[in-house]
Length: 326
Ligand code: XMP
Image (cartoon, rainbow, N blue to C red; front, side):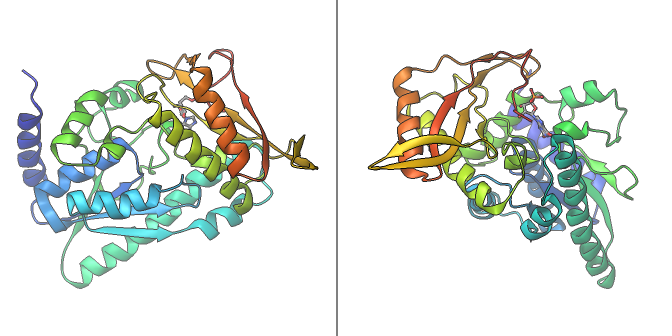
């Protein structure tokens, strides 16, 4: 019967047999699947593996540090971070259409990753090594959903910003292909990955880019990042993490609302809280959070984030509304 130690031991053997002495590249997204698959491969082959993390500037507060510091400390994975915020934000300038944003972010992600990949391949070749393998955090439900046979990389782009083009000359290592999310989390814990990463709620690959309704700018990202951090902090402090599937925090950047602060009138922006309960994100209901938790979040956001003077709650189920606003 199922046992995380057995799965780990079996996968390690399998990975070693598949890889031999070749070099391997892995894209870390900050999410559970790529974190666990990367750690598993690292356990099997050590520094033959290089992990790549693309900072696209659309990350949440603390996310990069979580990967660079906590993940690396707990796994020993050799990591390259790509500073790509300027590039991403440059390409997103003036863009408001949600699908166009997704396309740009997906495309730039691949470009950034391919660049590192080329560098690593060159470096390996120069020292006579081979880079042949790419790690993917494909889970069993992804395999079923995409109807994919072994080794195909056709993960739905919507669900994985790391969904890489299939014309890459790499063989895939997919150590989580037979597993469900709960099992992946258990393996992650067994491998010593911090709970903040293993227990993370779903977060979209395009990140905060699709939670700013309107154009994505650095200033708007800073506003949303602060509001999002406060909401997450208070939800965790109130013990709500298990009760909600995820809670998008959305900045209505093109809407202005009138407020009053001290003696003055303000003309700021509303923030939307979108806490949802769900089994699989296909359908969802809005989570009936305790009023005092909502009040605390609202007070803190309006007190601490000066550009925001109003917090509203989204009380729509899916369908008809999607979980994300874009
Ligand atoms: P919707 O908004 O379609 O979201 O109800 C369903 C689930 O998918 C996530 N989501 C995304 N994940 N790239 C991703 O990796 C995306 O472009 C994307 N759009 C939505 C969303 O957070 C929810 O969990």
